Each structure stands twice: as structure tokens, then as C-alpha cells.
Image 1 (cartoon, rainbow, N blue to C red):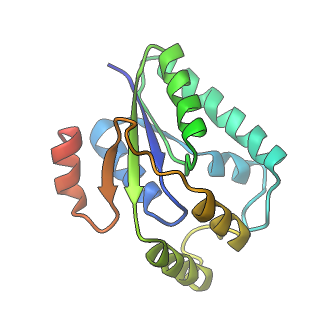
Image 2: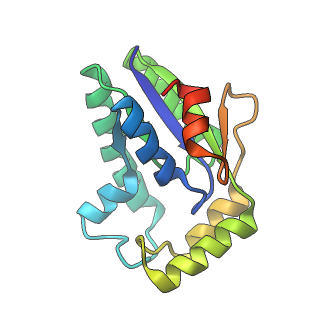
Image 3: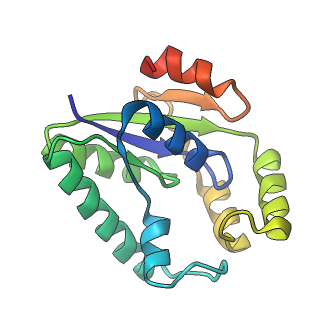
Length: 168
């Protein structure tokens, strides 16, 4: 059955790395609201984006996810999904598309994620995340406990986790 994998975790937890690994073993499509913002030329240099701008980017990304799910293709929704209401909204999209919803909590200590953010600020290996965004998500994060979630600890052996949790 088609599945919407809903990644949930603070910034720099390793969600995008996990999304790529899930993609390689399940051949699901990755949908990322950050990528949508980048397509519009925004968020490339870590500038702060308003709630209204994020709402537009998420709406576009959700539309893409619906298209894939409705065509029978599973989707990895690669974003923070840092509140229960955001995850519930994505679960509703899965339900409307007759797909399973699977929340995957990417757990990492905040100090480790902050260190990754600091290193990225120097290396620019990935697009910069504004520090206010990093803090806001970390401070308002609602871990997905009791949501039938699977947990991936950021420093866990990824191939073994994929085998044990997704069978690939």
C-alpha cells in the first residue's frame, strides 16, 4: 500500500539524510517544503521567512505529495513536522489519498543538532537555516509520542534501522 512517511525532528537532526536512505530502499518520492522555497529563490542564504511564506511553500509541497500518493507512489515528507497538529494534518492528507501514514521521529539531543548547525554555518555543506528558525523549532517541538511513530536515533546504524523498521 502507498505510504506517506512523515519525518519529525528538530533542524539538523538528520531528517534529510534519513529521507534519502528511505528513498533508496523504498523508491518513494521525497517532498520537501524547503526545496519549494528554494525553487522560488528564497531561503537560500538562511534569511528568515514569514509564516505566510512558509504556508505557501507547505501548500505547494502538500499538493505535490497528494499528486504522488493519488498516483500510487509513496512519499517521504521531509520537514520538521514539529507540532502534533502539523503531523495530524499530514496524516489527514494520507487518509484522503487512501495511503498509510507513518510518522518517523528523528531524535537527537538539541546540543548535537546545534553543533551540526554551527558546523554547517562554516562549511555551508547544506543551505543555511536562520538561527531564529532553529531556536523556534527546538523550543516549540512537540515530540510525537503515542502517535504510532517509529523512532530513529540520529547516531544509530542507518542500514540496520532501515532493515529492522522498513524491511529494506
